[in-house]
Length: 207
Image (tube, rainbow, N blue to C red; front, side, top):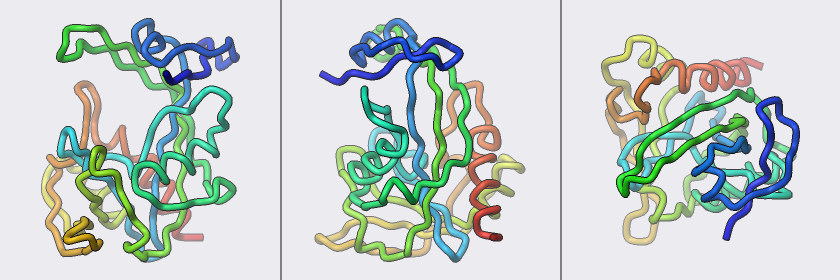
């Protein structure tokens, strides 16, 4: 059973609660969104196994008693098998996220989240990836500035690379990436969902 620290809407810690109850009752909690980028200007998106869409490099809940930085390192390790010391995690922003929906089983799902966005530079050695096939189908990397332009237009394609495991080895090949492949929930825009992240990474690359 997983427990999450819970908060009031102002961010004051209230205690901890079981994950299922947190989402059933819409209790405030923390998540971390982990982004990898490289010196050549590429940013890495995971291919979600369940929805076949492109999302953050890795992301998930902050467990009870865990710091956000520790959660960053754990999520990267669990989802793509890459070790990043949490001291190297660069904070980009924190924002409030709301989501209410009815799940396939008919139950209600209420998300009230302080979403913490972090990034870290990746050295480009794809052999270091060991992603969880139950979570991911692979990764896609695209240029951060080209992705930002794509999200502003809300249509079109850009050049990128598909990274996946074949016969026990990580391989990379060229791929055209369509705007429709990126995960965007109802009521969201791609620019609103990913724009600040990409702008933050572009600033880091310019330093």
